[in-house]
Image 1 (tube, rainbow, N blue to C red):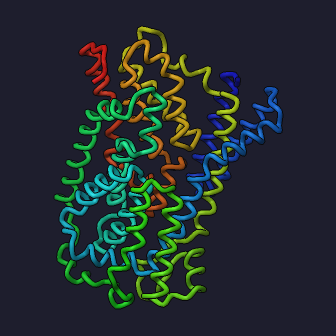
Image 2: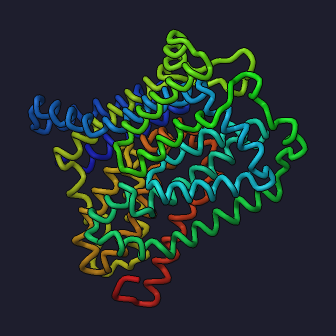
Image 3: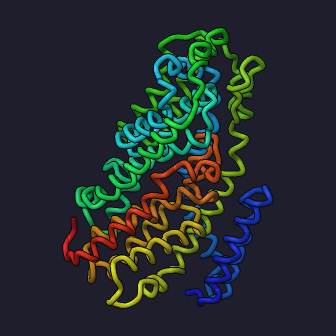
Length: 446
């Protein structure tokens, strides 16, 4: 176990390294490596075998394989969808269907529906976020606002849907059923969802989304691509694979393969052009708004994810933080409101250091459960974890989850976070609900 001083130094160096890299616009992996090296040295000097440290690092890296796959495949799927004509076709289709006057509200509502159906933020943002971002670009709607609407909607399902892996992780970590968890989350979901809906309606009513240009833009890309209903197949295959609970990476691979086939048939894209687009991104001399990045732009992020996995592997193997968990919440007289704030802050700290969503959920839920079930219903802990540890990870610029979301929509988290009210309203709603629940003195769940 690390001493208080050693733990403090590790956390400080990790956060400072990441923050410095972020401010100086250098690779986040470089900044994060300082914290990783510090942790390795401290654990090694504390008596851990170096071979054991390496093994725990490798195990941590293997746990992030799915995230690394998604990042790599997102770098490939966007240029393949573009070169095949799928994204241009969906944008032109959207120009004829969507009313720009309420574009943000529509984006939020559609994202909510799809995310509740799919149970995944990455799948939602990939299937509906990418074309809607392209459509917003043509309509000259501020992209951070659109990204905020899409991410807000995506996390309604990522947190609440019974099909969500994060939702089920919260339930298993806190010892409640999925049904109990859904009931516990309902009040704060309605509260934060209502705030988000009003927010986007207000933005739409105040914004001028260039309605007069809608007719001019109705066939923006039709001259450069051969359109057919078959161009929707890559998106439909991705949606279907997620609905059927295939592995996310398999759904992406299936979608990419279909996009390549369709591009060969309808657009006449050569294999050399495909390889260039997949690695460097899609570039067009005719349509500036269709420029995309490719797999090469994801390498830096994949390295960061691997380092974060190694860091988490050491934390879990050596049980670095467990001894500090119950000290965090104080004695038996702690109120539900105070426990909620402390638990939320601990989840935030874990999200800052671990760069994951999974570790804060698991450690907060499992380690604090003995404390909570002696004083409050388990459903209260499940709600607090879902409204803090699960959501806060999406607001940290160097967290894996935030990186993936920002990469898919093409807008960094620090640019869209102020326009993602569902994310920042949830912690506020859960504190208010805990305060009210404590005042009523309830001794059972909702």
